[in-house]
Amino acid sequence: MHFKALCALAAAAFALSACNKAETPAEVQHDVATAQTEGQRDVADARADAKEANADADKNVADAIAEHDADDVAKQAHAANEMADKGKSKIMIAQAEATHKVAVEKCDALTGAAQKECKDNADATLDQAKQATKTSR
Image (cartoon, rainbow, N blue to C red; front, top):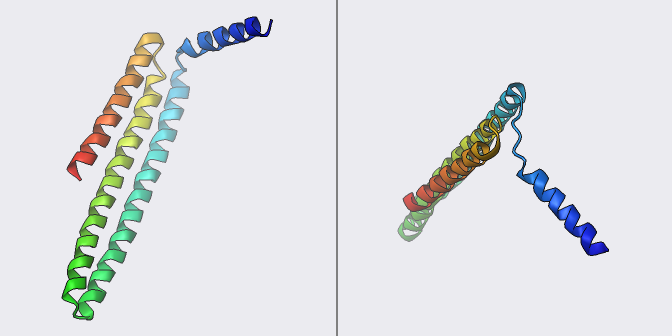
């Protein structure tokens, strides 16, 4: 008895999840605006984090220079370069994710297979951007 109920519940859940109903233009516009705002905030946060990390790394280099320790200067300079690269990567990923959020929200204006294809394309574009960021590092 429980098995039949569980199967019926699973079938209902599957049917509802497969229903890619379009949102109204007003809902889509609101969701896109929200995604844009969140994306801008995320990118700004990534930039701020990178700027702070770079400032700390630059201070470490300056301290090593002030101490006239050539080995430490080289080590700190290398660390500063790595920190700058990581910061750039985080910013690029934040930008890609922000663009992805907006694209996915725009897909909600579509229905059925078109909506799924739109979201799949947005996901693929995000994956490509992340891979390109990894490769450039």
